[in-house]
View 1 (cartoon, rainbow, N blue to C red):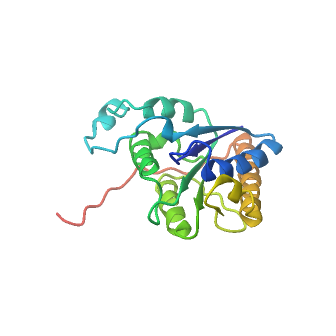
View 2 (cartoon, helix red, strand yellow; view 1 turned 90 degrees about the vertical axis):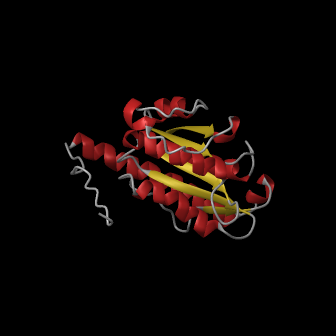
View 3 (spheres, rainbow, N blue to C red; view 1 turned 45 degrees about the vertical axis):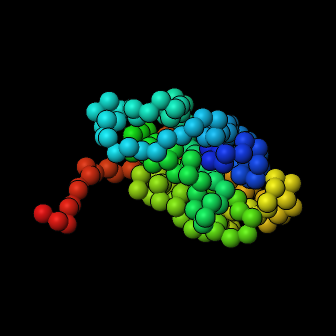
Length: 205
């Protein structure tokens, strides 16, 4: 079993990375492989609403997203992390997730996912809500902990002082590992989600 953790901060090894590392440690202690992918290594463009991906299966923008989709398809679960920018997720992560879920959401569906948020002081709850909405529209079980998945600190070393936040990250990792193992047992027993074809209702006709 493998979990892909996405660092949506433009700082490669800052507060968000520190939180994700704590989640990864717990996952690995449970025998789950992990990898951290940094969104900030390339300039991420926003969705243009061109719908080309619905015809080709790929986004027309060449900034690494399509390569990520190929990688992500091999993983069993996901954690998306972001710092708080104006009480929301980073612009880079929002653009990345918009295009990821629009062009390739089916490849992530029915796999567990979690949001992780880092903030200096406030805005964590709204950012947490923004990220989780991608999962709940895509048939993905959302993994929680004993508190909202957030850490506090202005620098990575300050996050390491947030004992409650770090515990939340560890519990999140443990819960993700547990759910992955439950899903694996379900597959072995021949269990699978009941699926229906999507119904689209337009309110203006």
